[in-house]
Image (cartoon, rainbow, N blue to C red; front, side):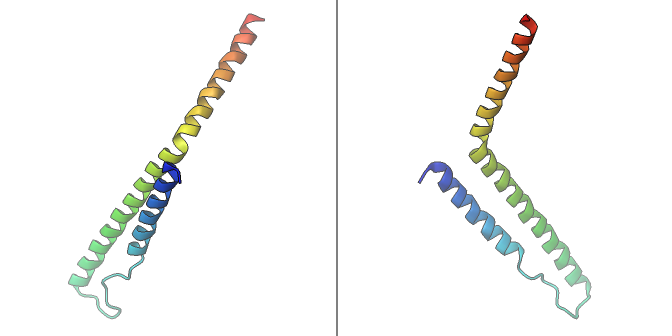
Length: 92
């Protein structure tokens, strides 16, 4: 198995674990509205945002690792082709 596939599997697992943690029920009781519960809800919201941030970071890093080199190669070739076309048009 290639190193990119291993990295993809590992990061996919981390994403799955993060999303599983984010889906846990909140700390509020159904019939409770006191201030402590509101504080708990705010804390759980902050934890949820933290998890989302980590998931986004994992996605960006894994996407860069998996798709970065092929995209760099593609754009290098594309820019060379455009430069060659401009050179041909300028010499005519």
